Image 1 (cartoon, rainbow, N blue to C red):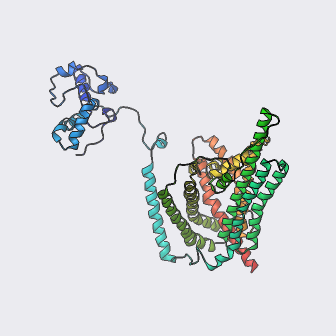
Image 2: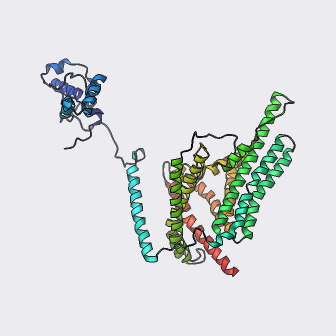
Length: 520
């Protein structure tokens, strides 16, 4: 029969016997019933040896009854280990016979108050890795069956020119625009260099930076609207333009703040001293390619590049990108093509279409998060030895919408806090208005990244982001009313992932199709 796990107070090792035997004999000698004062059963509570030696127990295998195996001296442990390593079973007799005394019938089996692992008081103190693995296995099994059933019913729906076709060559103006955008940081550096040498006034510096950042947004918008480019190419260019814009704003704002600090320090120390701060092209070049939106002169760095780790992450990136393409072509496209406009048809039909679209859309969204925020940003950080890799937090545990936006996209969140939220507070703007301004900026850029490539300005993305403001108020209220509850978390998953995103997909798809139909 296999040896079961020992009771926790019997000792951590399998040979903790002598002290237990000793205390058991003491209880018998003193007339104890074996169940009173269960906490005094351990051998550590017994210090006398006369009772045991005089009891005539006759345990020949125990040379020192007052010591447990765990209390033997280091020399005995080394001899025992050597004996086991050399296969000498005769020297391990003491350890094997000790199992005979590990489970006494009089030893208490219940020692303290405990909760069941799945009870409400103990569920969050337990590890649920096994249940998580079970969910993953079941998810894979169920979705594998659905994929096979879909392939048997409809066949492979992925088009031959999904990744690249001859029409993609017409997107070369977008590529040129993306390359030209990289000249704007050089212009911003020249402006800051002249400001450092006092060749430009602060007012002129601000005007030049506003001009540079405006060009970073308007120029890609004009190129996309003028060229008949693919939607994916337009989205990529707009994302690059938004990143460049945010980096240039951070660069200008940070340098302005350093100039103010340097000037104030020089005024305190000496009235005629020349204030100075570092304006380095090397730091700007590193910042423009680093996985961050907040400029600073130096960043935490890692000592080396793990080439094998980068290769593994890149393989994962290719696999999950292909999985996103498969889900979009095999599931999402047929659903939206066979649906009606959600605001112009039957309400129940629209709800059914949204719910049917929610599952594949959720899979694509999770794969997108994993590919961008975990794989790509970590690959880029590893290649650049960028140390701070907190690109996201455990947003899936967010109990309010406000908490989700603080943990979902850490580079954008840090930029918003540093260059939008706290500057508003320092200028006397109330917290509620500052939060509304932050959501307004986010809504504008979400609309640009979707509406411009679609060449359609219906403001669905803008409305969707601004709708988060009342949800923030509602989930905060529910969290205050129901402490330690997951009501806000369920509302987040429901409104944001199950209803919100599929509805936006259907709205933009049908509006784009209607625009193309009217243009013909």
